[in-house]
Length: 531
Image (cartoon, rainbow, N blue to C red; front, side, top):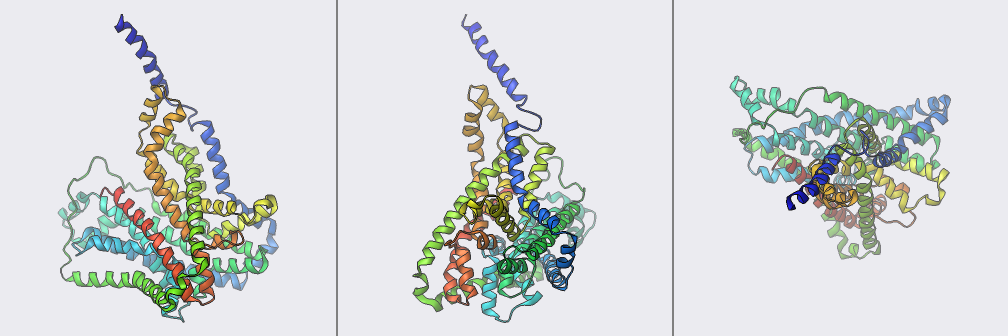
């Protein structure tokens, strides 16, 4: 009797589990999640829509008059020269540094691994402030390239080092067994495997160069972003600023297209577990000293110079620079906006990550792509879009904290999205299904199982968003409510007045806030590599 009762109790549960395991909702995902993701994608495409509408409204005659003129040609030359010179140097430095750290018997390679990633903790405009302190006459293309390379080469180094860490050493061993020397193995076997990581890093560097304002404005080097900001401040969203924004967005889209073409269709994955041995580190021999000197020189230029000059101005200012009332207020507002922006951005990214991972298909890919396109837009374009939209359609929220947090979400959502995707991919869907089969409602099962398993990834993504917000300058300058004082905006106000001693505490606090987040990014890359 008890056996029969047990059988009748278990069978419905099994049937229910089977029904859940077959999937819920449509092929593209639960309709509520899909609708929510569509709304988020529409929100993400607002800057692109703004540029398209402004360009169409201007008319062909206005476009020709404002775009095809000597000033735009000068800006185009400066911007393209900056990208064409800076990106290859960053790629060479990133690959060379990663190869020395991960593939050679470089003395102190673990220390060098951290030091080469550390420059990301120093905002580019703080780097520019330090170099102007060292060389007041610094400017032009050379000055822009110098500051850009020292600020952004870690964007190539970190992903390339991660790929080298987890690359199957059997590939190199096979090349060596065929008679290839170390250098031929590197160029014919290793370097092709770094193609995706290097191309992705180069794209990030390029987009940062197009978006950067403070670093170039400080050395009076004109690019599209600095010119757009100047036009906006003088004519308040005039046609000239909109046309320059259109050209800048076109450059961003061309970069995205170029990076997608660079990926090619080659296969980079392996079938099977691969070799279980650690890669053989090459002896540097007589190149040990030059390698150490080269890395030391790069570290001194990228870290030593900015830290030295920030410290120099702090010493010159004495204790008085720490007693300003705005310092504490700026720190608290930066923390407040950083935490609010990180929370909102992570929440908005979660439905899209869930759709892409749990219900893969073309719908999810299209909606995800909309977010990446928006994040590639410079902060000044995002700010101009939100200024125009709020003034014309929702004037009640113009220049409020809501709009500023929305701008942060548009700019930094992919940082949260990438981490959430990885976290959801590692949270087995079967556990959620099992919880529902045992009688838990879907929402309860999601909160107690999936959300808990993805919490570390969500925290990592939120930390990276926080890092971006702490160092964001352009959108904050244009959108911040009256009376807003962040570390970045106060630093910019003081340094623009040549009050370098007063700006130094703000620079130091930004570096101290950014350092843990930069280390988290570095640690995550190592975790992905299985280290």
